[in-house]
Length: 253
Ligand SMILES: O=C(CO)COP(=O)(O)O
Image: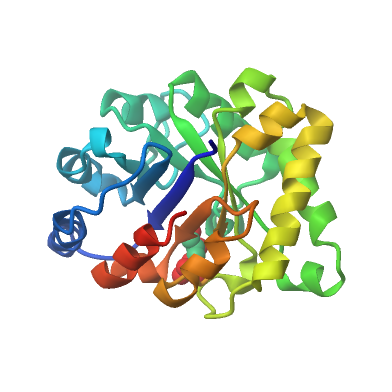
């Protein structure tokens, strides 16, 4: 059975204390997750050890970094390496969020390096893809995401790409309150899976969880997650409120 994942992306929000309070509120609800379900909290670097110490991996609650650098180590002031994350036993890292692509000029080629360095350090990339509004309006979204996968993931052998989580986040739906319709999400998730199958095989394609991101909230999560090729969500704004994110965790199928 494919993993079903509710992933919180706190982005650059919350003080340490606010983050700790939010997390404690969520964890104290003790929502039981089935073996194929996971809740993952992608938090700012300074909060990783706090979140790591509070989340119980045996109960399928995990912490993730939001980024790492594409070089192993050295004179890169201000950057954080995958090896550093591994040394904190962090198991997941968001790679290629559209905000990083846009504001930090992360190209598909750089993201391929980040994917490689994560895998080399036993960190599972949560690889983000998704098109801007102009591309959606032209109806070219499938071609757009296909290039993102090809240039950042398709150099990987089957045994490595199988470890990855993909998050499809249409840029026009991020933080806008506008979600892709259930049909739009299912359609492009099915396309992503068929593209992976064409490059690898159906076993690989059916193993990789594909999360939807973009204005997921308590009121729409269950409907979005019900689609056969949507395996959960990567959630921004609604992950900053305990009751909202708890409802999203409970909406996992
Ligand atoms: O970017 C996102 C998650 O990574 C989505 O953000 P929102 O849920 O705030 O739209």
